[in-house]
Image (cartoon, rainbow, N blue to C red; front, side):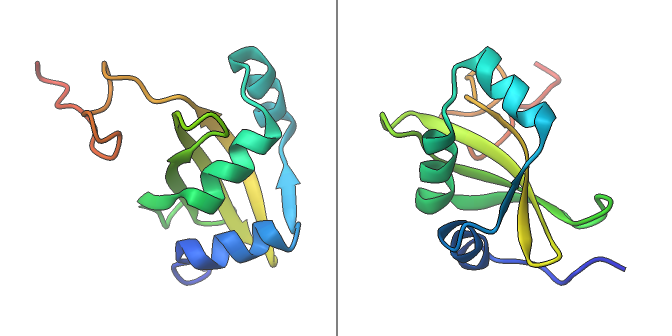
Length: 110
């Protein structure tokens, strides 16, 4: 059974306390997308949870919308478990897939 819903303040505290696990897949994608670790940290610290995936395995995960160091919108997917934040993926949201608030997915029927 998964852990109870984690709010953004719990995720921020874990990041501030440096209780972060960086997945190799994410680090490789960050290099490809030219996203720095500082950008991911800033995204979490300035961000909000916009989607929650409680059934993800092995831990529930969250899509966080925040800002990179240069104030661009950034999405970070992370999971919380074992007293740590597990960084899973990150990308710069685009208007093809997201509405202008970058919180709401565009209707795929267009």
